[in-house]
Image (spheres, one colour):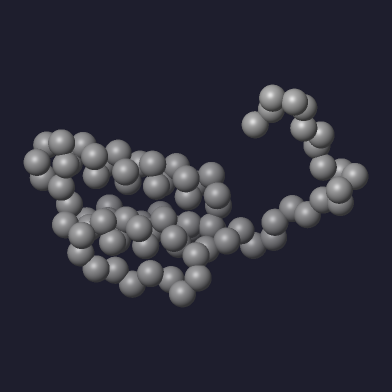
Length: 82
């Protein structure tokens, strides 16, 4: 599980590295949307964050144990469902 950062990332590269270090898929999507909103609002204000540099992980973070189901246990999809 990802620990909360001590300080908000200051550059786009740091934001990207933070997203890559987040294991939970929903948290990763939420964090990337939050960083995109920060970037868009700063850009609209004329103060876009610098690209910067960061040290990304060798592999993106993944959940420790994904829940595996047999085909019989998978929920059935209905026509028109996402």
